[in-house]
Image 1: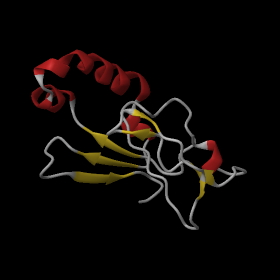
Image 2: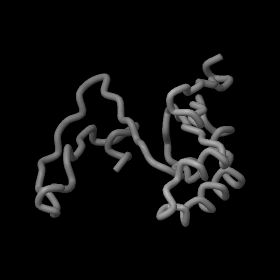
Image 3: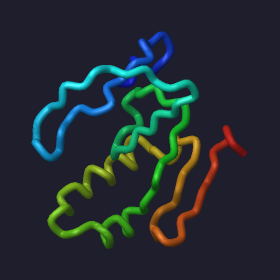
Length: 115
């Protein structure tokens, strides 16, 4: 998915993969990436697996805040996030970290690359 947009890639992408209303795959034609385009990839647990990102911003939520804000029916996932923090250290790998324990009062911490 990332290779066509990276160095030496075709510069073409699929604008949509899935039709949510029909719950099925979409047959779309590849389109050229506009000049100066930026690809934002959002997702949990993505660092440390070798994805070739130019800039990484990590949204950090401390374990205690994670436990307070996670609904009971999703609490089963909390150990994975704790292990990810311990083994991967995503805040240490990121170019910038947003401290998001309090969503109404985020704090930005820039890494050496931007300070």
